[in-house]
Length: 283
Length: 315
Image (tube, rainbow over all chains, first blue to last red; front, top):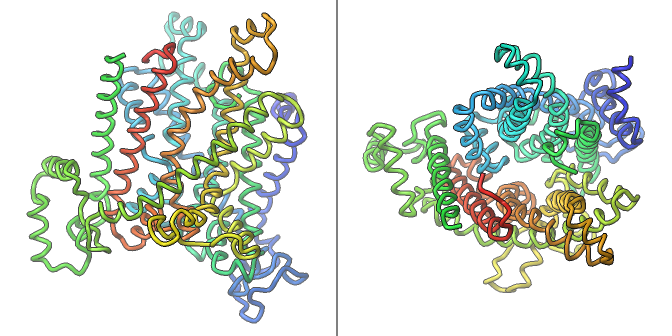
């Protein structure tokens, strides 16, 4: 109970963070219950009612095939969550072990960090496009391609944090009492990484939305038969003069989701231990 | 100082070598025979053999890298399958658009990000600060292609103030007036990046404001405005200006999306077209060029940072 309250406290302190939390809950709810919430089948074609403006029958209007935009927007929330979670899991799943290992073994660490520096010279979007060319376009591959760009920053943050933790008196004390590396990592390092990583995860989640949407928009991410906010916008491009609503709804959803995640990251960071706060950027 | 520059240049060259190995590996990681990747599927086995021998692709992979690096150093990035012309020519044709777009975008970023970030920091904690920071975060959460499509809809289709797509060179008919084609794209590309610079300016001004010398300046009775301009702003600017370098390099890659939305004949759209055309040598060439630009800008920023602020020690 107290723990739940302490997790929620940064959100309650600022009303706007509460709004962010509600927005995210809304997106998750939509994604989970998409088939129940969607008024139509998201892929059902209805040529007679093509490009219908928003109205009572179709609250968000229909697209060039007469597919219901509202249903497609709801269905796309799934894609947004899958991609976001996938990217966070991959970036942190690889970044945390590499970062911790590099900090604990300086000789390996120096080489690794050098390599990370080189990888950072590849701008994220170009890196993602290069990987898509090698792997081929698909949902799973776009998760890999986007995660690659966040792997470098995550590894660097984990590396820096672990180096600091290693120098803490209690870690040294534990070591001098004969604690092994595995014990130090599981007892002292990983538990202390949890809250900074939570902050990093929400920012990665937010920016992964934008990168994945860009790949979808360029036609290099989710295939056209799987609705996503990005590929809905790619299709809307052709009809923007005739059907501006096709542009409005999916775009607004991307902005709201990314905005809410960014707000959450900010709120969590403000609550974070001040020693680590400056490592996560911002004030 | 000289030893710092030498060390820094050597380290940059090392990065460049490692990066070049990765970029070299790119073509070999793509599924298929590199020779057919370069010639296209329509090539005859004789043509394939000839190219394989002339590029040294029958040699061990290590020798192949050396041969490739040698060609690149002589300015030969290979031949585009689609254009049937050197990759360097294709990149040069797109360079004007991309460079002007990135430059114009930088102007907006500096004009919007820095002063607004300053105001937010000076009014730290006020409703104005919170409002501006909120807007900045909102802008950072908007996908550029969506901003671009909205700009096209509002300013090109409805109001008809600006052209919606394309860009004729400023060296052709129309001259500098052709820059109006780049106005909407550059504002689009600037939006999220200006927001990041705004946040950075604000954060680094608040950082400097906590320094002892600022307290001293206040304590000796200096008026608030001179404290801000002479002590806080000048020192905070150092961090911000060093971020400009990376921002410019990042713009060249982010332009991929913006140039596609506005159908601008730049390097970014060339990347997307080359992916669609399976024109791998062009993709490889562009990645190489952008990485080199990034590393060179990084080098310049590091050296000038050290020149401007002697306190920064080489780590």
